[in-house]
Image (tube, rainbow, N blue to C red; front, side, top):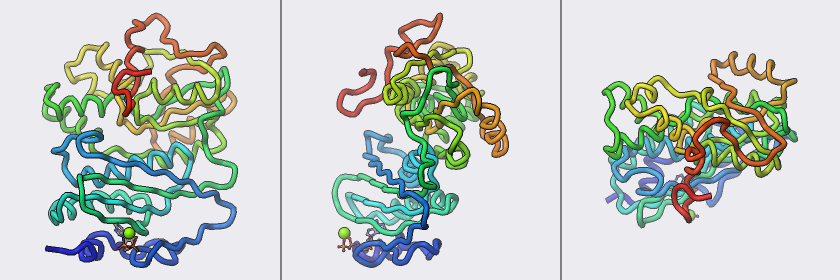
Length: 324
Ligand code: ADP
Ligand code: MG
């Protein structure tokens, strides 16, 4: 059976990619040369089998997603991801599983110019922790606390797709073959909005990525900025696949508001910057929709809508679903 060191050498020692890596995998720690004038941006996320993804998820998708969720945090900060470390706990040295996991991980890493520079490999219940460090020009990071009354509230892409994908995976929703595939892809292969995040520097007043559901994550912006919001349900961007999924419209909206795992960006923009922002988003073909407005009055309001839609808040690991 392969030793820990064989596994690291075979699967987790990437060819040298970035010139700012003085020392990568193989020594006691990595040695990096951050460029002058940039701030380091760090994020870490753990994926636990059976909690963050169903046990039967393809290891290729787990490798992708473990990195993608961290890249999404980089996007929400307006950062450019640079280096990653990976702590892997495995019940056994299943090389087919590890090979497929590594492929999913490195495909996405390469797409974004991220180099794996270290990690840890241990035996135990399956758990994957990825840490990413990114770069942002000093003072230009996007944070959650800058939203002002009158700012527009925007989201990239479409919402609720991953939630519908999860229902399909759990056999709680049946749709046409093509829609099912597309929605499952949105669940398994989220595409972090790095390009959009970078273009929003100096334009967005606040930003967050949608990992726990729109109302929960927008709620964090509102709390940090001490403002409220009014959302227009008719403007929630829903994919054609979700709209054609056979779910009732109210259910589609519920997923869009509260199902997590979409990894889109939610951000606020002052009226003065809105046009420039839309031009930037169009230049990278990033779909972007205004879904409401920041208000003085605290709290989140859905004018004319069933308040029950708002009762379903995002996922909280210690309280469960629907907690406030
Ligand atoms: P140490 O005992 O000094 O912590 P390890 O034996 O854990 O060293 O790791 C040896 C080298 O391999 C280190 O550079 C470490 O960062 C790297 N490494 C270990 N596991 C992984 C992994 N899963 N992915 C990437 N690098 C890893
Ligand atoms: Mg170690």
